[in-house]
Length: 601
Ligand code: ZN
Image (tube, rainbow, N blue to C red; front, side, top):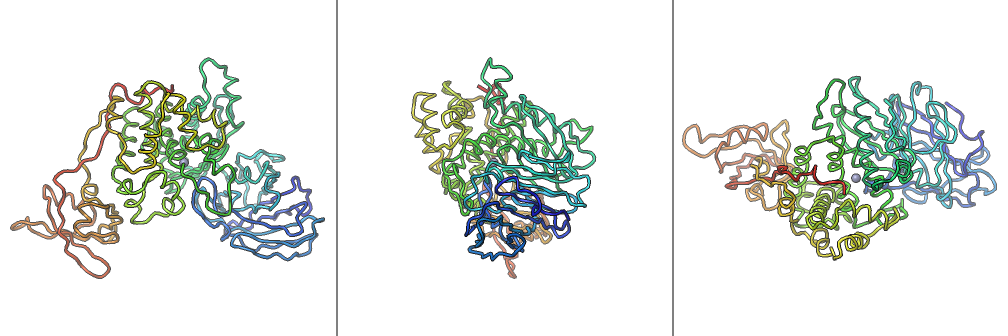
């Protein structure tokens, strides 16, 4: 165990020491030193982390909190679920020590085991009332078990060793909370994009991992995006570099057996992905999984501009103690989702056919969500805290995703702007960046930029597409852009209108969609679908056990009517089902004016 800051001079008025108390018990030990505490010093821990709109109650993992001054214990009282108060001598430094249990393998909290450490300050660092706008230092110690480990973070180092252990400093608590730390014996590579230093670290990669390929592909994404936001024609390379709103950037990717996700930060991102989706040495093709990973990288990097700087007016100052509502996640998440794959196409990392396939998938997801007729994307944004982040079996019937439908709003806006020939969504995004000075914005700013660039009001489109549940004019706009919209036969689950997984005892029904044949037949979420009876004489009219949904397709053939045999709690039921005569999904085929011809105007 290393000695803590009690014998070291604090570099900042608020100074955190972070060390591994026990790798096997997943405990970080934090020692907070406040050089000049208030006589009644309040301390709080955030209940949520910006970018992930759910109250997560990080304080539930805090334990053993105690306060001392000059080595003597000071009374510390808990005043709420995530708040404490210390009565102390304001003339003397106050030390608060506690442990944080860190065994959540997600990008939003903290982790510690024998091979890896990770934390967000929202999980580890208390907010010192009255001093959150001032500098916050954080000192990260290497334990004996951390031989060969390195540290990666977007935060600026003050005094660190070659491995990155030592002291970092943030200008205020917001910056500290926005700079997660990754520790371990990770793979690490570097590149420059448009003159800006970037680092990519990958924890948990297999020996077959092709780091050089991921580095080269990530660089293409970064350069495309920097040019997207700042690339004025004819300007010098230096002028371009100067406009990038960060001096260095870190990608922290955690490769795990199963997982997918990311969280955006001002000059870094924490990502989680399945190991099998990483590129492999000697394999040139781009797998579906690798395309998804590149899409994730593109998504989080785009957020560096769109939500970390350009951000909802409601997020001008975060309130870490409760939900922070905004109606604009359809813009910040949806438009980012539109551009993540489109900018992969513009980077040359995927072709038109792949892009159209990804777009078709997004369109079908929205078309197959009855909740799109119940909830607008603006409402979905506001409800994120209780709906999107808390899905259940009724979610597809009552809500719409502001990611997918928001991406389609962006698509419709871009296609209509391009069809009218006056502007593009690219120009609108840059117009917003200028108008809002890379800061807080509202829906009125979007409308003002659209109006200024086209000479007409776009309020009718925004009202219909964002604030109502009416269907988007996708077919009309896609066809006008030269994308052929075809109908494709629907899968059995789509024809029935249910979502299910194959389980050990049969097909587990997860959701029955509103207005579907499955609902009409009386199937319910949580039913176990065990078998089916086919009508007809002789062998045709027989009963069959099923193990998976695919068995149903094989048994049915051209039958449109059958009886589903299901188990519901302890009852066995026979439910007659009638399939629709026909059902289809949508497929986009690239024409001559496909996505490759949507220039970065
Ligand atoms: Zn996002």
